[in-house]
Image (cartoon, rainbow, N blue to C red; front, top):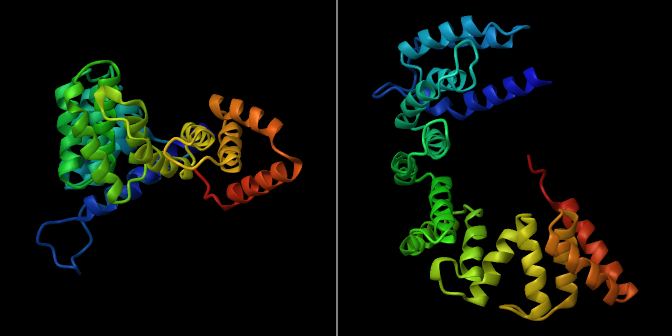
Length: 289
């Protein structure tokens, strides 16, 4: 099972970086196969062997990287990060990931940012923000949320509160372009008033609903309470009961308490209607991996 999981992670990394590894400046559309293709295939074959030949795979990926494969660089970074076929070396992994990030693998710029916030490469806040910034400039929206979440965490600790407005701007930009995770942090800003941010019930409810609809249990609990109290939304016990049921089912403490209270207050037909709506909502949700 562990070996299969490792291979699935590797395959995901491989697929995610196909555009970056296949790009050759000025190359025509019908160009000959890239010179690193055979080495990459050999490396993958060695990884998939039982048992995997990590040393051979490392050598083959090294050959492919020398020939210009960015995808091979990503694999080498992964091998150095986790110690497959080589001694684990976070700095060498970061060097490889940086090559991938500079070649357009923006998810690796984001990964580097988090690595520099951890203990293996830091913490080095300057480097972390550098890599988040690289991805943001490239239009990689998850990086907006990453940096904003960092700024929000700072403000929660009473540090850098003057950057709360910057965090909001990053989040609004990302959300407007479809990065819905940004709604979670916007909801927190407008509900909690983090770092002196204005508390605005209507906007708080709007962002809380977006996050709740994406399945975030804490936001579902918050939305239930908003409908119960009429904070930024109309008072609606059935709506409150619906969101409380979802939050409770996902283990949210506030959701569990609200669900307990509301279940005792609703009539039998109301409880049945909420239960049916909850089941329909659950059946309509995509699988979350």
